[in-house]
Length: 115
Image 1 (cartoon, helix red, strand yellow):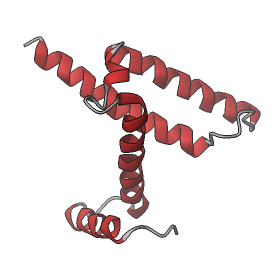
Image 2 (cartoon, helix red, strand yellow):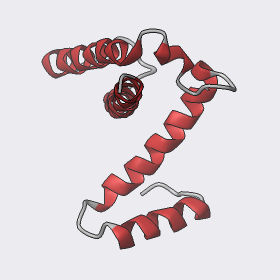
Image 3 (cartoon, rainbow, N blue to C red):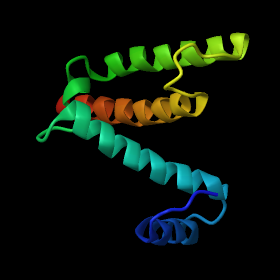
Image 4 (cartoon, rainbow, N blue to C red):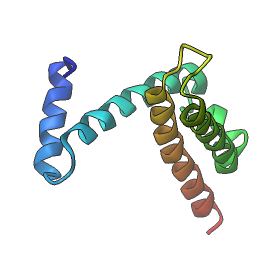
């Protein structure tokens, strides 16, 4: 198992107390996705809006990105190899999970604005 900073270990333990029935690794992955989202928001979003890059096309644009990730994963299942070596199957799953959450956020914002 990976070595995690003590603050993450505390958060993990709290999550396990609150949600005792899920797979233990699920909670570590959720914490890793939080870090991934924070890092990518810094790089893509900018200082004022972490979803700046995604707002340009809204939640439907996120669906396109999800489709790209699913195609990449499907092709890996069929070919068992990625030519682009800097992104693994796990990376594609991580990106897919984060995109799904961000798409949900953008859809909720749109729905709330249209009320």
